[in-house]
Length: 74
Image 1 (cartoon, rainbow, N blue to C red):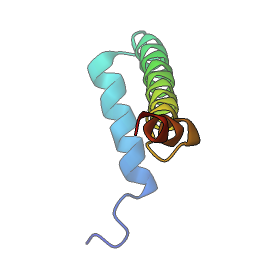
Image 2: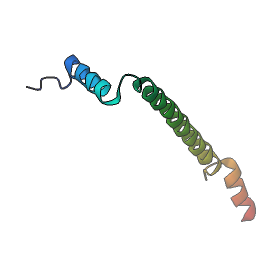
Image 3: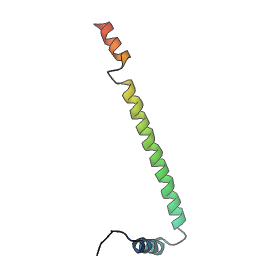
Image 4: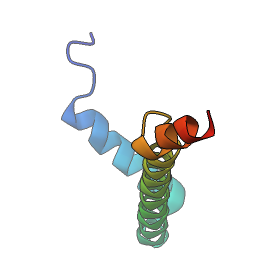
């Protein structure tokens, strides 16, 4: 029955059902909105990753500036 999971005719069936449910006029708008939201999600995830990287560099206790401050206070 299920040799390889999805076959080409499965995808064709999904496309036909999507056209029947949403209509051919709304599909381009829906795809455009989905693409835009994916781009926003990707950019926000990249920004969060960059923020974490910068935060890890400034709060790392093994940095020379952090250890110099500790020895000067002792």
